[in-house]
Picture 1 (cartoon, rainbow, N blue to C red):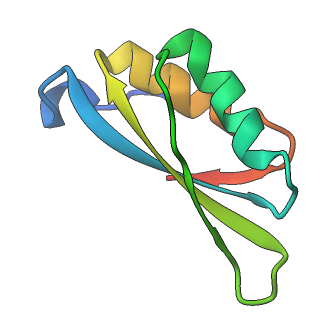
Picture 2 (picture 1 turned 60 degrees about the vertical axis):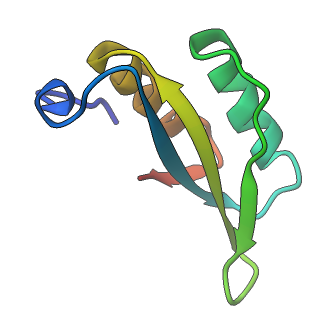
Amino acid sequence: MTVKNTHFDELLDFPCQQTFKVMGLAQEDLPTRIIEVLQPIAPNDYSPTIKPSSKGTYHAVSIRVTVTSKEQMEQIYNELSAIDIVRYVL
């Protein structure tokens, strides 16, 4: 999935705090893989919150990121979406 023609720059004042919600398979390494993707783009000491789905098949991982530009935000969406066990990024 590639994010195209976004209007993040019209809707947000950068830099800003943005919470990304990543829905993925309920695997123990999901939060670690998300942080590994974020560190080169937006280095920080992340503390994600994890909520399992009712059947336990998926996890919703919420993680707060300081985003500095439209391009950085698009990169985060693209790279998180590329993780093979991720199903959605909100």
